[in-house]
Length: 117
Picture 1 (cartoon, helix red, strand yellow):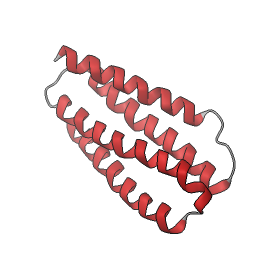
Picture 2 (cartoon, one colour):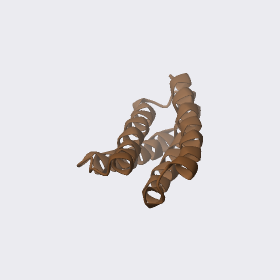
Picture 3 (cartoon, helix red, strand yellow):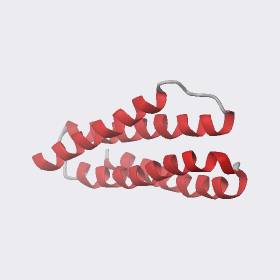
């Protein structure tokens, strides 16, 4: 299972770098602050997924798998909603806040998994 978290973390980091270049050179100036926040979240949670991979190698239980899932889905929802709004000018509704709550739940689960280790 740890390889999945390593792979997702690497893909999230890779896409954060590529999207950062696009945001700097191909995105309207007005959209850059919001997108910058999304990219910041994506970069940090790419690292969090790598940490989940390392903790999962120690077989610490279901909490670490929940943390990885919450990080991956929450990152996609939060960052995706921000990008959607930046590119279309429309709101994605409650997707970003739900994604943010999943990211926070992931941190709680990660803390519990680390504590139980």
